[in-house]
Length: 482
Ligand SMILES: Cc1cc2nc3c(=O)[nH]c(=O)nc-3n(C[C@H](O)[C@H](O)[C@H](O)COP(=O)(O)OP(=O)(O)OC[C@H]3O[C@@H](n4cnc5c(N)ncnc54)[C@H](O)[C@@H]3O)c2cc1C
Image 1 (cartoon, rainbow, N blue to C red):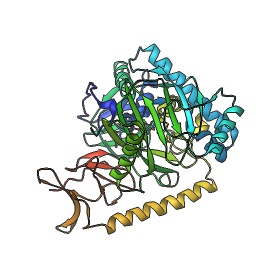
Image 2: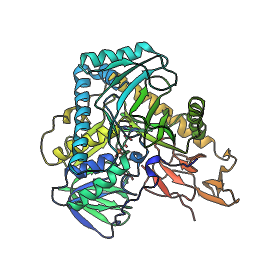
Image 3: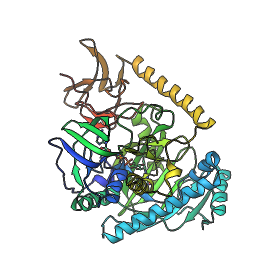
């Protein structure tokens, strides 16, 4: 079984150079996932736009998605309605439908070959009909046509609904084409260019990268988890959810599904493959990620009786009040914008982020700017989430510290070398790979992920390979030791 997503298989991508010297620009976008590339696309006709990514454009969380473009997003509408009321939930629904139409238009106008296809979306439950009825109630009040029906596959389900006008696509093919389009229009792209920190100036920002400084008037952060510490954002408003996905050969079908139960299964098909995601949990819980991944594989084996060919893990940011965060980081600073917390629906919300951020950065109004603004009033629910989240992250932080010197798995353990906490992984040939076991981001102790063979931060999601190279932030540094 390969440890990578189906989108990465056999995909040839053009590589862009890394930054070599200091540069200046009008607008700098940091992070080339669906949010960053969509923003670059909307700004492609503006002067002096630069997009940088610490790795390859598109290879962050976006390359691990299931790639559904749907407005039937699990319990999102009732969740939003409970916190913000019906009007806001309806507004969110409209934004998602517009995002789907917008990406369809882009794909058709630029003839982007990304396997976009119409695909009915199912929402189902195997344990709680009442909860599905609540979703139905919202759809009725929002006047969304739907059909009560049966799930077209033999997995546990007691009730299901289906909507039309939803799609699936190949997210990496889309992004690859889009980056060439924006580059041809004049957006400068630098890959393998990591932003380390930022300094505010009188008329913008200076971004310090490992390869040079970038002076910009406007700065847009699309790095998924912000790479610099923003007091109060995490964990006050955001948390991280780990998810697992797999793919296997299967007869192609033109529908997708997700359920609303404790264990979530997200299903779609792609070119004679089935993709199943699920078993999400807060990043700081269930720290044996291989065990969690095996739960998904076991579920799949039980109901489909075929072996997965690929399996992958990733994590996404969720906002405690269920609405993504897109807009000015601080309303007093019109030069710094951000898009994050897509609540596992970043294909639509990333596209939407592009249109909102492009309008705001150019001084235009956008009808969704209030819906997604960052300075939303805290609610009791958010405050309680903050307390629980802080407690859990604190518990995980201390837990990982106490587990020092204990082996995590047969092939990996933590020890002290010259007084420094180190993680050791012993490979198949008996070679020891020694790294620092402390995350450079906020000094959390790293745990070994036996599936992906990576050292992972269970608090904030940074990941490193066995030789200490950074794979995923928010850390911007490696954990190599001499
Ligand atoms: C299992 C799973 C399935 C999902 N399925 C769906 C789905 O079907 N439909 C849907 O709508 N959503 C889905 N999502 C959600 C969606 O995948 C994410 O919300 C979305 O991909 C996030 O995009 P992004 O642009 O914010 O982040 P990313 O794609 O992670 O992009 C951020 C980029 O920033 C770069 N970066 C980070 N730090 C720095 C730095 N310091 N300097 C320079 N660059 C940096 C990274 O390299 C990366 O390329 C799913 C999520 C999961 C976990």
